Image (cartoon, rainbow, N blue to C red; front, side, top):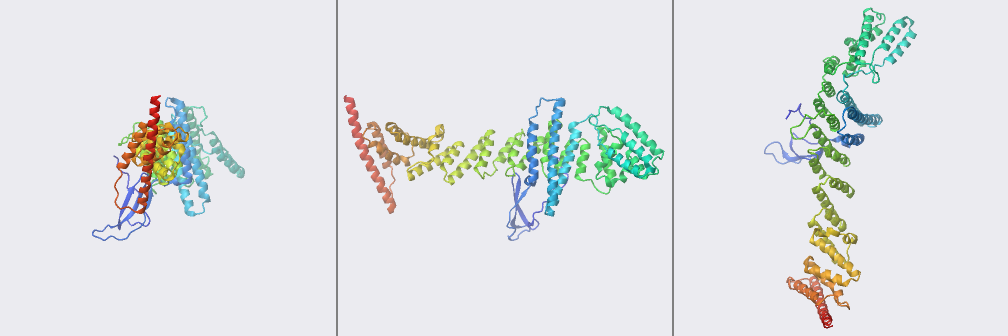
Length: 615
């Protein structure tokens, strides 16, 4: 692994004295919890009260900026569009699409920068104004770096031409006004204006070749040189200084250092007037020498300077590395690297831990998005386009999303189901089922447990349904129970719940014979829990008392066997309170009523079956 370029920045937490007390921390996917312990760093010291707070340290605070959130949202659509570019496209058609994507990214950065600038101007709090101004500077640097990378790496002209057109037309107009105001200098002003007008410049729509441009520019440069040698402008130091600038004289350019805000503006002006058709191989030399000349040893290069120098060296990986260190979030490097990867410029650069640079940066960016309560949805798509570690990372992050509302839970669930993330689907459904049980929403709990295919939890909820039925004498959520369908096979208890409800429906429809057969089968098949047998036998009483014989003699014998089995296994209790004694009396009365009804039904069934055999 490569060594770090320097010590990481120290984050100072207000109110925490790390020199005096030991620290306790716990890492999360997007943040860290930090607190002081009660232990001093000095050995054999007593525990002393310390800071009572727990601090949350976030690594991607930019996701909480309202304006930068627009940057994240807008660029998300551009990113998805880039992933769908047809790999079969080659040549100019593919290149034009990649250039268009790059320009779209830049336009989003610029729009965000302009909005941030307006907010900085209107900020009432000076501290907020400074913070927004700082963000404007960062976005401006990002737009500059991206623009340079677009020119050098994506458009890749045959010969890189750094000709930023000088505002020569405006300069000529000012010279014309000066000539009118001072007739004595009108002649030399006119000569200077002609030189500016005839300066060869290659514009995007121009059809002349580079060879033609170089010849014209050489002739023009020689003409300017003659005027300087002839001292044509000696009587006007200002115009003579302008002529030296147009000849690319470094000393004359440096005299105007105050008008050039930075070294790369100096570089552009220098190339414009000394070597407008500079070759790519020479760019780094001009960039480094311009930086050295401009700074003059008075100050050290800034991070932006190092990034631009790396770009002029055509060192893509160094550009990405420097940007990762200098910028406050992963948005820039993730999207730039992804675009360069689609340009086939990063294929050979793999990292040590199984993922390439593109995927590593996208994973880091997506992880930061998951720290936000709403931007996590964007992070899902970034994980989707990380073929090696994306799915594993998505599974780990999606399990940590707080399911505050059912609407949010349904969103997460839909994402998991679309990606066949079975374990996560089951986990989410179980969480929602448990919440529903705690809120006594049994129908919702049963629905989630069925969706999770959790037999144990479905059994638990079914027991709650049955208990509620015993207490209230009716079922809640009938629509759900009536439409269980094949889902009732998830557990025996759920099967019993569905079949028991079916028994009630048959009874209500006066299909007594079918209802009796189903009731008996629930007991003899042992699907019904033993604790519910007395309820089932009690439900059989109205059928036993019908004028028409419903239960056959054989079915009645089965019911008698179940009743005796239930009563014979009843536990022997010791001393009981009054309520227990009353309950036992009620139970004894039920048993006596059942035995009487079963005996009467048996007699009627035997007589009926005997008469049928006799006839």
